[in-house]
Length: 232
Image (cartoon, rainbow, N blue to C red; front, side, top):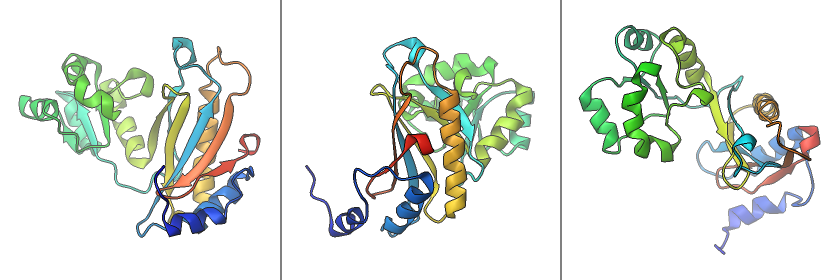
């Protein structure tokens, strides 16, 4: 096991490891115990009562956080014709519809945070699955990132504002950022509430028993703080 530094150990001493905090208490404590010399990200980790091996127990959706993530999002859009013009007008950073850009991505370039596509471009996007898939950048209808031309403006605007995709992993855990340590406690609390509500709404019908089994808040490099799921 890796040896922990003095700052981490000092931060951990302020946290009762088995205590279940309210969301407000956890956020206050997370801000107090963040020792990074940069504006650390505040993250939430869920343990869900689902079995991801079954297709009917997948948890995947999107949520627009009311206060965003505290960073500038670079948006790439796969579109052509009117769709490309609409994406450019909506503020997309990169329009991918030419061989040069497609080849660049195929060779490993992923200097963007969100990829959106119109349905007519999915045959092209499909060839990039090996690059985009492992990085969580593959456009997908279920995640709301494959949309008709008329919806591009809305989706780009939401992505810039703090639209977050969440998805359960193969170990039944789900991870998402909710902002930065520099956010106010109220901003983080409202972002957390929006995320928890969206995860609850995404509960599959096949899930039985306790759905949100564990909820942990942490900051970049910081110790985990357990939240009472019934209070979130």
